[in-house]
Amino acid sequence: MNLSGLIHLFVFPGLLFAVPAGWFFAWGEHKAAARMQRRIGPPLLQPFYDFVKLLGKRTPSRHGIEADLLRLYPALSVLSLLGALALLPVFPAGLSFSGDGILLVALLELPSICFILAGFTSGSIYGEIGAIREAVLSVANNLVFLLAIVTIAVTQGTFRLADLAGPNTNPGHWIGVLGILLCIPAKLRLNPFSTSSAEQEIYSGPLTEYAGAALGMWKLAHGLEWVALTGLVATLVLPAGGPWALHALLFVAVSFVQVLLLSAVAAGTARFTLDRSIRFYWRWAAILAILAISSAIYMGFRS
Amino acid sequence: MNILEKLMYRSRCKSPSLFHLNTGSCNGCDIELVTCLSPRYDVEQLGIHLEGSPRHADILCVTGPVTRATLEAVKTVYAQVCEPKAVVAIGSCPASCNVFAGSPVIEGPLSKHIPVDVYVPGCPPHPDAIINGIARAAQILAERGVREEAKGAPQK
Image 1 (cartoon, each protein chain N blue to C red):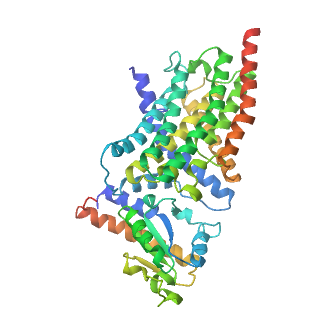
Image 2 (tube, each protein chain N blue to C red; image 1 turned 90 degrees about the vertical axis):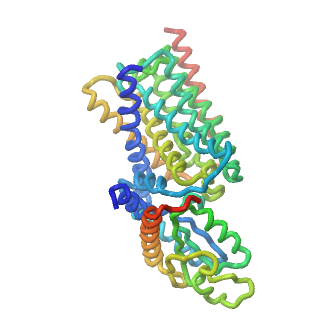
Image 3 (cartoon, chains in turn yellow, orange; image 1 turned 180 degrees about the horizontal axis):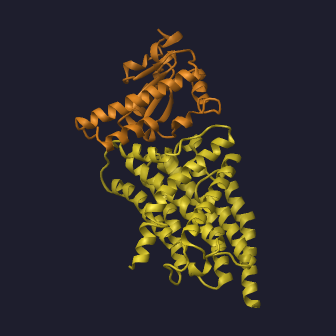
């Protein structure tokens, strides 16, 4: 691995940037919701305090394979998201290779799979119900998410992320970005697609049995998920070029605008039941996605 | 205290997660506790938040006079909250059984079964009093954490 790859993984947009950014985005989400409800909301360092506090909890000791698996899942989620962040073409000239778009999609999906497995492994009935809901929702939104990614790839004729980054004149590109934006609330388990962690019905869903440091890792993974998904959209819409500091600043700004937008949607909506969530993705969003991909393929044949 | 212990102390004070446990309350205190989350009192600015699972919580907020049917649940949920933890008894019921004292189906007061750190009396108590009690409990919890870590806490 070369130096540029290491910088992507550990400095920007990887570990050193993404962890504080994840906390900042988590704060932004809560603060925006609070302001919409005419509350003051949490202080800036709240997610950081939550994380440190969880590291200091003494958790009940578990034994056997379940204990190892329950520790493995959050760690795997954090690692896969750091990998996904390293692949993001914030500076398109940097690290990119043929087909890294497919790797990115796989790495973004891994935390969701870990979340489902954690629910089943925990043995809690609430965890299992939450895991089933997350699994169904994941099947529902991934249809649209994958079609959106493929649409963007078809407009450029490649899966290489450096070539997909930045805006272009093809309408397929923008419909693809819209499709990804529609999927982000379900991927982040925000209202109205928050059935898998519906507190009033199933406590904390798959994370019900988690405590202490492992729970802190899950919260960290959730923050990184915010950074990775909003960052993906930001790289797709931001033009390349200019001084790198300005570009990085714009990247953060566009991501944060999405955080505020998603938070407003989450605060303004109630929770859909599972069948309504599926209907939204497989009926309305899928129509958009199928139209987008067929038009993209058609344009590809014509040109 | 070294700097890491100071950071941990501050984090525990600043981020109390609550688990709300109703042990046969009339819902008066429950409504007052939920009021604390509303725009008027907004406890989120103090970092206080309600959690869905006792495993995620630091402070157990108990309302109600502990009826016979809920006694086992009280003990189980108390055991599920991870150390360091604190208990806040909200209202007069967990403190003294209130008007239900002497009833054959009441197993209260709460302190007979689990250690209580802060009592918030009242029927129901004012939300300001509840917030004060929770803030006090968060401080007790942080001090307890420092004390236990200093003497090397037993691994549970």
